Length: 336
Image 1 (cartoon, one colour):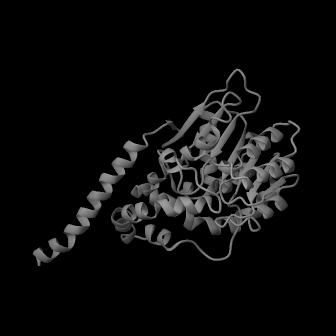
Image 2 (cartoon, one colour):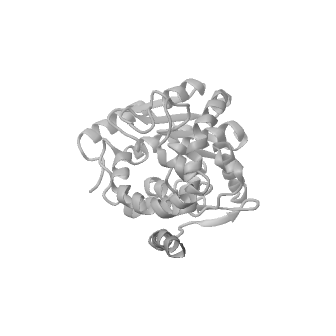
Image 3 (spheres, helix red, strand yellow):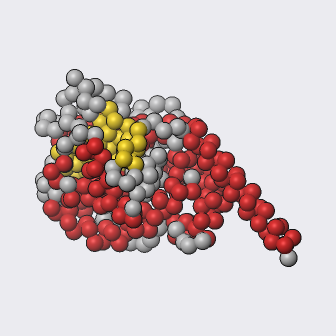
């Protein structure tokens, strides 16, 4: 009997050991670029760029999407906005190198509260909050619950409203008692590494993915067991949360711009971006033809023009979108 048990447990132990080894490799390949700050019982990680003497924009806070970390948004915006603003690029609770905190952080409102506390710790009184994809739900919660800290909101392909259907099967397994622990430590790493190339291509589809995207943004960090569990928990709580909370978006009064692609197959713009524009009085919807789920990378120039408009500068965002479409159709959007 003992021999049979040992035979059964040996491959599981080997798989757990392999996953632990690969998790350490992921962290060596993508060491923490930020700084951990205690916000009251747990630490949130962020890259903070202090306000430069040449700043012409208010402080900016960037919130990444699902399965990501702060490197995704630093890769899109840090260099293009260099010298123009104080910037805070945040690892959401449980993602990247941030600690998870309490059960409230399984919901966008809890993560918005965490970011508000981090802003206070960093001396940022008010900021334009930028949310991509899942980060859009958190940016919306921030606008509802922290209006005094919201100088404006920029949504990029945001996930903000209920949708028909469900979520991928592996999120349910990853959060299940007992079996989830095993799944996250035995299956996730080999399965995730096998799918990583295709998944990141899908995120950009129908546009080309930047050649160095995986090497610069560390998507493999989400395959670590605790991070994968946090990411899956975010997913399984999102739909019911949005059903209950999206009606409160009408309370948002901050200047708001929503940028979306009409070819986004991940977060459908007619369900989310159009509904958000309807809910937030005075918001502007910028729809870019031919763009998928990554306007932060494909139309960074339009996003920066939106930040400028939110800050009070005269900008024609619809004209900027048409210019981006022309550039994209010419095939010059992404450097090889």
